[in-house]
Length: 151
Image (cartoon, rainbow, N blue to C red; front, side, top):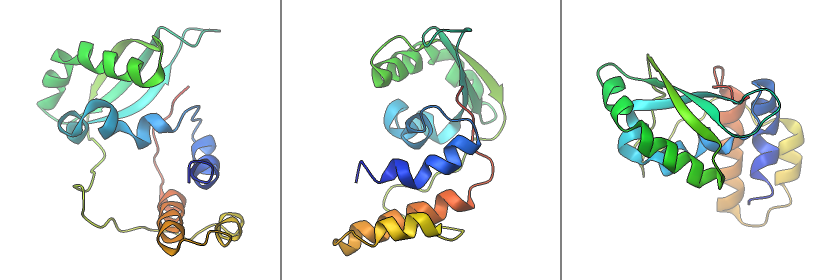
């Protein structure tokens, strides 16, 4: 599965300038469900020619922006732990809307169609449940319009 997931989302993430799509995809896992419910990573920018000491730009909902500001050191620590090095040095918070995430265990409606090249590569998967999950992911990725950008 780890080999196929990047194939499913690569086209969409590259279209929006992603270097590492895992930050957005695994945001609730990285920062925890409470912080993820009220914040969304928008971009990660680094100083010219470097891959450390970056600024993580977050969008936070309403009054939760202040809470996110207070826990920024914890979020920086968690993101850096995810990367395995000091990728993020600071967080910039923009008050706005966070991406709505379905609670765990709830079915997510998946828009769009499975791209032909992805559908062809998924036919070789024998496990029906895994194949269906990857097709759902491909449909969701093809229907996504406004992904955040990581530079």
